[in-house]
Length: 284
Image (cartoon, rainbow, N blue to C red; front, side, top):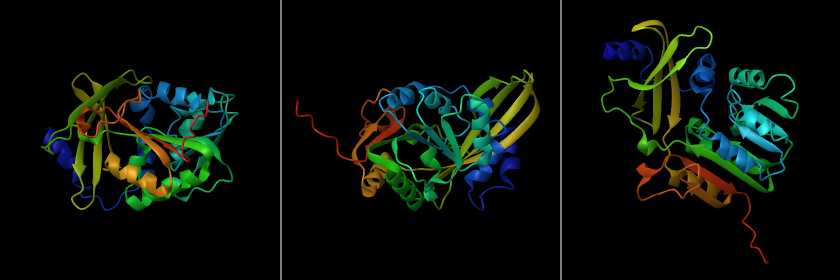
């Protein structure tokens, strides 16, 4: 049964004719908060890091506002950008009236961003950089981040530890990811996924089957696609240094333990902390 489901989903879509993250997230926005709204493993880290700065902050790839609301609660000015108008709409709704007085929203692509403002801290959470599908895209994005940072500004972002991804060798199988409860219908909602590698580019395409269940029966199904660039930490580190960043720290978890390059599968996450200028040495 699983094989026929995948075959049915992929008949019209594999190999993809092109990749468009705006189109992908226009569809994903319909269930994004249902599937990911409760994800919070990174919130304490980003909030505690932001507390070190007086602002203003920029959040690149704000999505539905999962982190934005945490940054806004600090009382600093926050500029939230995303290239998906559908996700920006969700972000505005999540903050609601009275909570977004210090938040400005922009439907912008980080590769073409041009704001007349500098930021002490720029954050790109939840593997946003993985949607930059070429070295040129990523370099354009990093250069724009660099240009929008204040002289002593910091760029912090995280990415998935793809070495540890459980990518099925059998492309006919779907992997169970999670189950949540739809607050509107009270139905359990199951997420099944599989990853496919583009044979011509270092890109993974993930297909998600979102199923509303009634016992063992599927009442409703959505099949969604999300595309990621497969970049190693060293590749990203080199691009950051080419951009001009100094003192780039690569961490393997939210406690900022150093990334283990010798045993990459042991890392839980890949987190980059990049300083625009070299750290000043204390004379005290």
